[in-house]
Length: 101
Image (cartoon, rainbow, N blue to C red):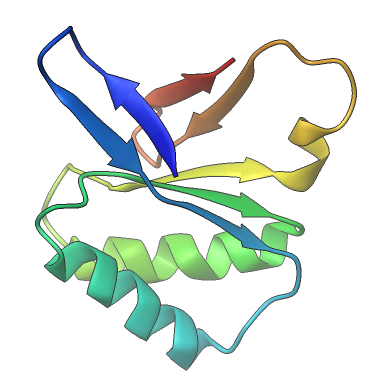
């Protein structure tokens, strides 16, 4: 979990998931649906090892959010975490970004 704050009063936690190996589409459908049903979670960071898994997850997320503009999942790759990056960025399907120092 990452703690974030918009100001001194409003703080929250962002769950982080690391997917080293892809799962079945059915499994992702359950995981993503559960996240969208959980009102206390406003965003999730997924660190993925491959683009195929990202594509599957984004398709499922679009299906769940059909007709809506808000996407909870922010995607990054495991390669983004290697090296001397002082700032790592995670993007959702709308292009919104979470920056982690």
